[in-house]
Image (cartoon, rainbow, N blue to C red; front, side, top):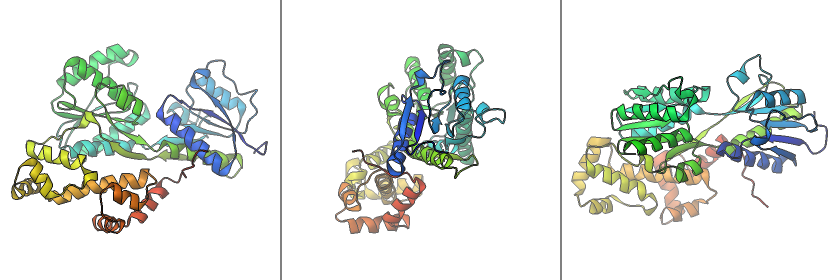
Length: 402
């Protein structure tokens, strides 16, 4: 139960990682709507063997628990706690963390979306590289990826590091490079997390393996620092709604501190959409004309390119291109253009606060009425209904600063 009018909450999360930064924001958002709360933030480098919560008199804890010492300190404190990304060992009945409510991520579903991205690029060969120590979230991502690939009639090769490689990044890079060199190409590859994807791109660069022409690489987490600035080539990735995760963690902790939640629950943060970058910027098609057509369609969703304009850019007759689209994709050129536009509109609806009129202007519709008609015709639902459903899926209100 609460010991003071303003709850004192400890946050133990990695601010160097996207997960921790996003969750911090979500926790603060919840506090501004339902608080106020007083926060005490510990950085990861403070969680040493001497770490203790004995002298801190607080009401609750939200923590990623990196070692036994932190686990013991939380146990001794005896405060309501929400765990973040608990390990397999911490979920065992013998662990003091066993009765914690938890925030985790939808690893399986994220991997399925990555598989769909590579399948859309017409790859026929696939590979997966997981975390070296086969932790549960990595295995879930492997299963999700392989299940989807298998459902589509293909197979997936999975990298298995040697015992020596599990303890040495350099040894692992050598073994990984040999494995990558032997893969049948072209191949679409999922790395279990962004740093693993960066390692793969680095190894490919050193070995002279072309990315994405020979190996297209996609990661998971969508940490912009890694994906856009630390890779030889910007890396495609999928992220999670980490702000929602922080909001839900705070909501759970609030209920526990008030005595309204007594049984542990687990909330899994849903994945967002794939952010395509240069590492998968290719289409595995034998017809270069179709490759160029799809690249133009994808890059010009906000310019409302029409079929005639596309044919002029490609210097090809409409009948010829329509026939190629029907044979390869089973649909018309216009259908593919509309699919790309709808995908862009959904991103704007779910991830921005743009009004429908602003979206119409951004996507070059002459009126919001025509945009709404187009969206309803293509999706079977209205833009307002779709946005409401997307917001209900992630019930973490956006709170402005200031």
